[in-house]
Length: 395
Image (cartoon, rainbow, N blue to C red; front, side, top):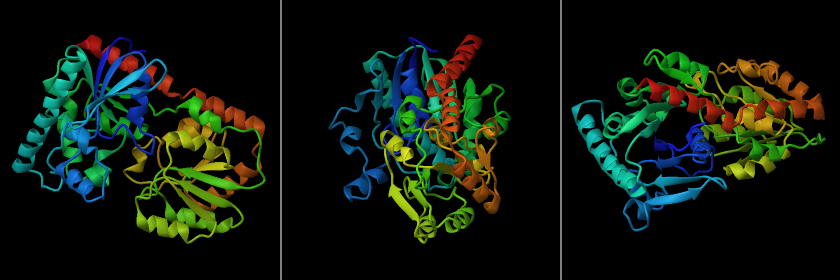
């Protein structure tokens, strides 16, 4: 495990939020033994305006220095993370590829880099940094060379070329950025195949689970009331045709969805079923109590270019709670074939779900928790640390 190092993490996602985030969980573990500066999401002037209009919730006071822009977050009894909020940047993603976009991207990067350097100086973290760009190649492209680093890592956890929000610029910026780093860390077999073509030092570190937290959702008792759970966003990744078949075929079972609604059409399709409940987004700390009430966990993703690069956090979260898991064959998750059921055929998926629920017992639940325990974030952080140490030695 990395110890006594200085880690600069230039993130895409915010530190806070009502859903689990790969990079946040990884940094929480590394922050127990290292000094970590996590650069929060780079809000734009559009976000500022939307917040003033009551349509968003950007941290304006921190962005403009009305409140401290560096905050100390206690992640464990031993570990802290320093989270830095940059000033607002220009909204440029709507622009086409070309000279003007590139010019403004460089301008935005200078704003963010200038603030990061001041934060590093304040925290006395100027030398021998481990630079981690977390799925943010647009900001990484012109910033990675601005810092004194022992190793530079691109941490990739989704297929950016297939991401709707990043489709216009994500793919070509990633291709330009990846050769500038010392190595790439990916979270799925699908991403390993695609990113290995761009960098010889591409390594797989699968997503993990906060085992101690999600194991609180374990119960040996098998309830007669059948509640089928899903934790995650209601978005375009879900296979709604399959869900229609499964949900309508079991009218006496309840299907509970916990997560943000990102796709109104999907919400309509789900709520047309009387046995569906959309419970909204909940924090990670609230999820174990929900899972304790469930009879099984679903991962009903459609198979496409985006989902084939996903290693879902929820698979180990379900297993940590001892739940049977039924999922579609959207990605290469063959390591779980002995412990979960998988099918893209709606009727077969339904039969797997019925079998898993009706044959569940205490012994099976315990075996599932043991699988999840071996996939904890602590184990993943050790793998990540070995990769970084090897890359540092190559320098």
